[in-house]
Image 1 (cartoon, rainbow, N blue to C red):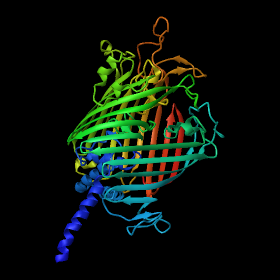
Image 2: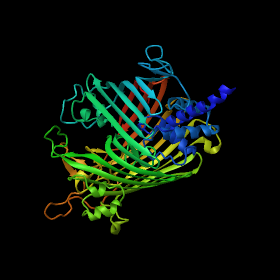
Image 3: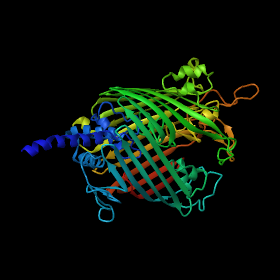
Image 4: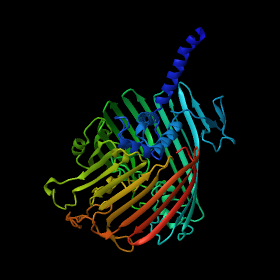
Length: 577
């Protein structure tokens, strides 16, 4: 009994050490992780902590752990299938203890990855360390994917670089290898570095050029079309209420389900430095981004002699959170053709006033986003982005009145007292003509020529409906229907502009260089121009065969301007996501 009484303090100290290691993991989890799909559902259910909002991603590992613990406390609201999903995530994030397999075991708590544990449900690492100072994970990922598409193939093919071998193929095989190292030091410094490289096997089918994820790779988009690559990294320091982040990450910004009006998943990973403060119910963050301007005169040129203008973006966000949801106010400015402007780089300021003081050269925007739960199980998300406004022209179809907005609602059966692993989403999004443009095309809302604010181009709208069924896997079965309308600028067979209707973020209203008289009409008609209408019916599903071994299936029926383009893809992945 005496020995047992001495053991109690030691056990308690060990418990505190484990808890500190568990909760003080401050590194980010990339937005590709399926945990975010689950968190958005549980957010709508009203069972996440009040200080967590999915309007800005990624989250820290410790935030996800806190969210999962909150969901567990409300598991009486979950169906059996949802509980199965929750357990899978609890094991991955070390809330529920599970075994670990390492390529090179270092102690008695781990086992050899090869070959006995390669296809079981243990967490698999090349290397893993966890003690009172350091948590470090090193994991590889492998992907093999087959894609098929039939029907007429249309895509914007780059005109430089190595041409595809076979442009009329209907089948594509892709393979990629990569790795990720992440962790936390002393509960205050988090880090992550990941990279992948891959290639298409055989020729490069035409339909791959419309893949927004492949087009994030400059190598694929402009260089050798057979290869693609990507990298992300960050370092985060956090102490009490203050945090600082630096690195290149893919981010989601803006309240929405299919539409993220400030930064979408189609955006290139962007280099940025963030300073932030977070108190109970309030968060302020200031971020300064480095963007890539358009090479001039040839936007596809590259190499050491390529002239590219310096380009930056400053973004401030104020967020107020309560149990019913969140209200966020954003202000941002894009500027170029000069070095970093200290006025914009300072973390505490009002950008609107600064743009006027700096002689109104830059592209200023404001946005209001909101997440509201009128009752548990029903959630509304909306973002309103104001790009420009002429007060004297309000109510008229004036070209410089530019804005984008979206509103979506997610409903769960639990709102009506029914435990079912389903959720339904309906969202409408609209982008007015000339939105995202600027009189200096280098200040347009693009990074290396790719639009990063949402996935809709100017002069577009979309109605999206989605149903998901959570059958117990990490990956729900999803059926999504989207109707997209877009009015394109009218061009000739060589791509020369004939009529400008505000449908291109890189083309603003044209004026005569001598008289400054407008060449294009200053009045706009929504969806005017060359129609580019799309009906997209998409079915996706995934299954984790064993921990980190998963298969993904995607089928899409696309009706693009009356032309059917069915497509199917199947992938086998070894990845902890």
